[in-house]
Length: 313
Ligand SMILES: Cc1cc2nc3c(=O)[nH]c(=O)nc-3n(C[C@H](O)[C@H](O)[C@H](O)COP(=O)(O)O)c2cc1C
Image 1 (cartoon, rainbow, N blue to C red):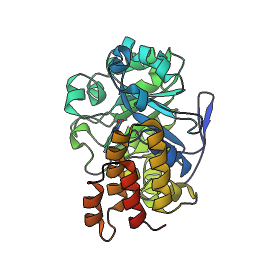
Image 2: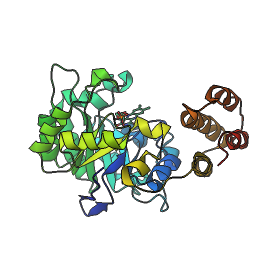
Image 3: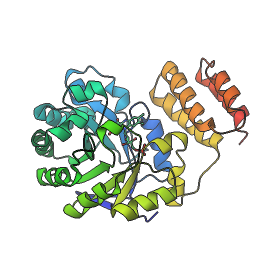
Image 4: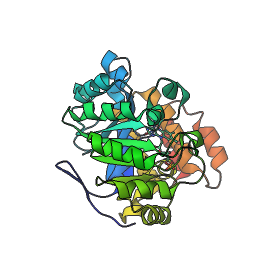
């Protein structure tokens, strides 16, 4: 794809191929892996602003980062402008100069609370949240969908409002909330929004190859792309997008296992890395048998033994 740096506030992001926030996946180890394969910017999993305020979430692990990972964005969700601003100013977000606000999450519990994609229906509140968050001094970005359903598409209007409120960049997932992750990406909606604002626009949805990324960029005129599900099966999609050299799955897995263990306990590491190995083995011969063995593994060392048999190099 056409690579360009993106300038945000005083920061320069190396390139315009971003890793999406993925709840349950984009932890420190996974982000560091994708960054190493060329991703320009990676996002944490979404973190509840209220959870930060009341200390009720396992934010320690969700928000772990370090100098080796380098520049990373944190994503928060919530609906109360004051609590959202307090989250931006929270000590735990200090290592993240960029804070992204989730305005696309379709999960019923979030939506019913007036958070995530519910903000698409309440643009005045969405605007207020961004305005408050901007006061924290962070670089504020917004990730949103093109509407709740096909009857009312709002990308252009919403993009203008987010820009007006002070957002430094927007990411548009070109699907409506009711489609969850299925169906075509609406290029036109993203293109209209891109033409209506002067801040960088990142297009998201359906990028599973370099060709998909090029189509998305060409059809929308966006400044960059954000990759979500494809990265779960293949973190090295960022090598494909950026021309960086890749490596074998075994070397990839070894790194991810090491970095996950560095931050998470043995139990979490076991469960998480079993899941990742199952993603990475998909489509290979003998995958079903290996998955069965993997899911019986009780420690990270047992997983590693099995993985070394699957991937000889
Ligand atoms: C398992 C999973 C978790 C997700 N978690 C988040 C999240 O925490 N924050 C967010 O903004 N979007 C989240 N998304 C949406 C993705 O970031 C992305 O917008 C969507 O998957 C479309 O991109 P894709 O077609 O490349 O998968 C999640 C999606 C999936 C499949």
